Image (tube, rainbow, N blue to C red; front, top):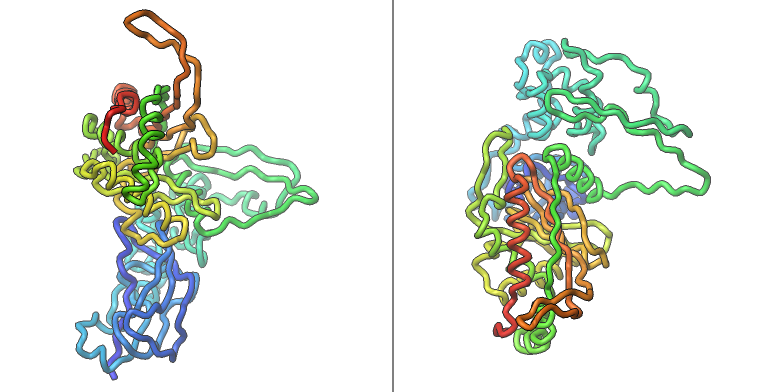
Length: 448
């Protein structure tokens, strides 16, 4: 019998770690090829990890709830059939696992230079390491920070909250706030301070809990969304521009075409594909809206592909953003099929990691909830997000060769939030106006 390693697979672009949420097999269980061994969750999507070969699960190296790096060995499977498979090295030789279980002495860590985290006894995300390096936090100091994440993991919020109480020599200032863990009846103001370009939350406001109030623990996805939203507002100075578009021709064309379209193609024709088509055209006209800013904050990455994410509401109330890849290369039928397929599988929690990766621009339809406009938060590392509001009938002045007249028209608001580091008002406003122009100029004689 030969032992082979089950590796935490790469789950998509920028995903460096995953949380084990459930083992579907126990030690000693027989596992068939492609049978699910465990379920994991990343900050993007939940997935199942199958076994690449048949055999017996002899060792689980992590527990449910553990956060594991991509590439680390998560289990050992013993199998005769697996002997012909070109498997990775044995568990004991895996550097990723050695980093988790090998501890360095405090003396050694104290002498390590800032930015060297090779002897860490805990896992730290790349973002936490980057902030620690920028702030001159040594490994021994980093490991003294109490973590609020899964299994005591130190999060970005923990590091940022630690900075204001930190002296230049790397020690913390003793404060009474460490003992304020219980809920008080007197709310305290939130204080912020700037520490080396980081806006730091010094102390959360105390929250009074009254009789009959219900305390609800955020689920895993809501915590991830909350952290992502706070990070986006911290990283990007948000500006929002608005236009009102007369989409009467668009509405009338869809009303005329949707029944024939569904009968012929078997697909419902919603407004979302029409919006995505207009956005893709406008991005080709203004390609500098389709960019990202690198981690240094000094370089702009101009994206070749136009990959448009569409925010989709889940039954749980949370949001997920599946991505229409190369939207500019698809015709309206192709966009419609992609939108309907992704939306259906998003609601059923059947998306795969690649389908929520690689977005370069995001569209959110707040009109689905009866809202006329919104000020959305940028989906990092993108630099802009468009919110489309509900379409409403309004009386309007219509200019004709015979003179002005009053008529009933269909109007909607478009609102674009953009990163003012790299998108100024001229670019943001011009792009938004171009999207509206494409919607307003919809060809009533266009074939379905």
